[in-house]
Image 1 (tube, rainbow, N blue to C red):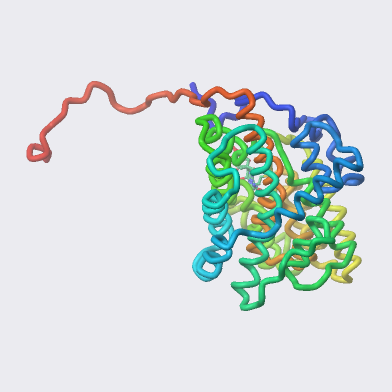
Image 2 (image 1 turned 135 degrees about the horizontal axis):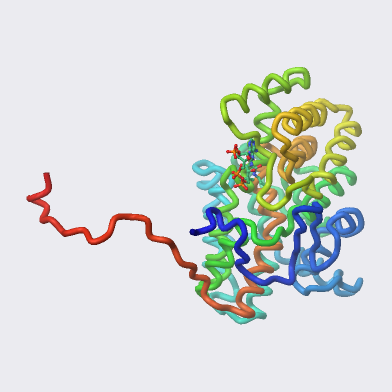
Amino acid sequence: MPDKGLEEVIAASTRLSDVDGRAGRLWYVGYPIQDLAERSTFEEVVYLLHQLRLPTEAELDELNERLVLEREISPFLADIMPTLAQQTSPMSMLRTSVSAASAYDPDGWENSAEANERKAMRLIAKTATLLAVYHRLRTGQDVVPPHPKLPHAANFLYMLSGQEPDQEDAAVLDTTLILYADHTMNASTFTARVIASTLADMFSAITGAIAALKGPLHGGANEEAMKMLEEIDDPSRAEAYVKDRLARKERIMGFGHRVYKTEDPRATVLRRLSQETGERKDDPRWYEISAEVERVVNAEKGLHANVDFYAASVYHYLGIPTDLMTPVFALARMSGWTAHVREQYSDNRLIRPESEYVGPRDQTYVAIEDRG
Ligand code: COA
């Protein structure tokens, strides 16, 4: 019998990240996620995932410079962006523009390890610009060029709002990018590795990963969680809302996980960030609604919050529009996806599982005019 949803199937070997679902632990290259969230930066995690070790100061400086230099998008992407801003949702824009980015990549179709490392850094750097340009255009505002002195997270908030962000806001966003950077064989990473295993190019693999992330059972859950918080609107309404939804057999987005049987360690960090950011902004309501939803879902179903649940209120506090929350997840995961694609290429074998046939057998073909 096939394992529906491939639950117990080990689909690849990786040196990038590891999860202990029973203990609620996650590591990148052996480093506990809590330590990275507390002490590292997104750029350092990019280095870690791509080089499989922490950088020296000089190495990190060099990576920072490279990422800053890669922030501008090509004239081709800038030209198609007004149409995408008018016609497509943010995740569709990202999927389309990452696919289109292959057209003018300086490394073209070269698939060497060195070319793919350069493509990876370009994708990581440019995703922030794509999202910000799209958002500025769709809201009728001037595009804000990247700020060369700001790190990745701060620069993204700057390009989005046109103002240099509060340092604490930038630090909170940076931490969320670290938490979202990689997560073993999740659906979008698996998709990227399947595509890479055919030796299709990195842009194809990442385009597929973005498509997989879009769905509400995966990355789309943070947006759905925020919509739910907005519908509930007040902590006193959370209990009735959750019970009603569960009675109708509807899922509560941001809860449950295929791997974690206890609390997702990323949710632990994000809960604290949501509470602290709500207090700092003198607007505790979104945290309070979230905490009440969590209490009821836990009591009613025994389900724990996953990474997407508290990410929703955190992003809301940072002024990130609800429909950009999944794209911000993609902005972070771009680091993990590209590292997995490179890992797949480095020791490749076509990923091609079997299926179990359950349809009819030995049928006799009947000519179309004789079918009743
Ligand atoms: N709300 C309500 N019930 C949920 C639930 C949720 N968020 N997540 C799981 N369940 C229930 C299912 O209804 C099912 O109950 P049943 O056995 O009575 O039918 C049971 O838990 C197992 O669910 P299943 O879909 O088999 O688990 P899975 O491992 O395939 O699913 C998720 C994992 C993440 C897809 C699932 O928990 C979910 O849909 N969560 C909401 C979306 C989400 O937050 N996604 C982001 C994940 S990081």
